[in-house]
Image 1 (tube, helix red, strand yellow):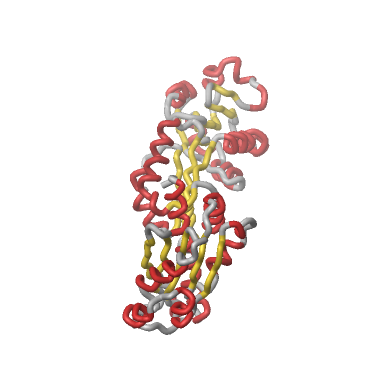
Image 2 (tube, helix red, strand yellow):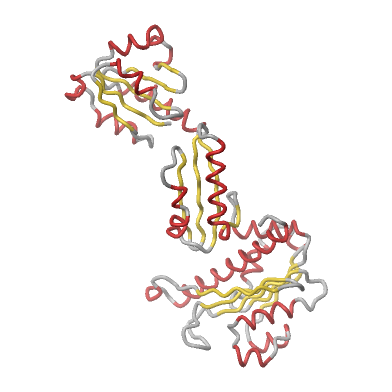
Length: 361
């Protein structure tokens, strides 16, 4: 609900109302004055009432004689304010801190708590600035629809807060547009972590999952087994950290490792294919990459591959994660950041696979 200040009469314009103190009292509670109307007398109030839409609160100060005439008998309404439709008027000829605290702020509290809804889009793999660019068509010029972007690493929450007075068609248009614009990055439309969303989808699928992890070192399995009931769906997790292990445990051809390298799309594919040799396995996920500080080939630190699929199709995703301010971080910090990104990328691609199988995307 907008809060507007009506400054009525020339005497008020001369400083009879302590606007600075009024602003401080509001800001202490997280509110601010949205608009200030300077008018000669209360006869202009009718014009102001016709501006804007939705709920609004007006604090009227100065010479209120004509304003009282406008309100008529209603000016004596209880609770210290007058209501006309969805507009609230608080008469306060001069600054009265008691009125601000006992009438103005409670009105703002009551209406603010009940007049907004929030829609959340949980995204992965896209920066807040890029999201803002992708959504600029929907974030600008929207009355009573507000966008908030909260980034945390490669995660970013897009929150759309809108007044309940906004027409359903308008908010539906925005939500559908946002979904189209950033749908490839969304993993949930409720406040839930990526790991939990993926675990829930997996447990709801009834499928058996096998994992083969190289540079993520079991981090993917650890993220999933944090949720009760995962024993019904996680068949196995194999940490194949060396080339010998990849060959012995997953039958990755030696020639692939020698010609393409352990950090390659071909190796990730062969690792997932090896998991699917188990007839009980329905879904396979494999990770291979380089978290540093050294690498097989120059420039490979931060490069990784994630393979996700089944007996019909295996998709391999190549990612390169560049650590920001790497020169200020220890080797351990660098490795942790890269492997964490690999785990989250694998969770995200598995979530997308499960959502597609379910028909959600």
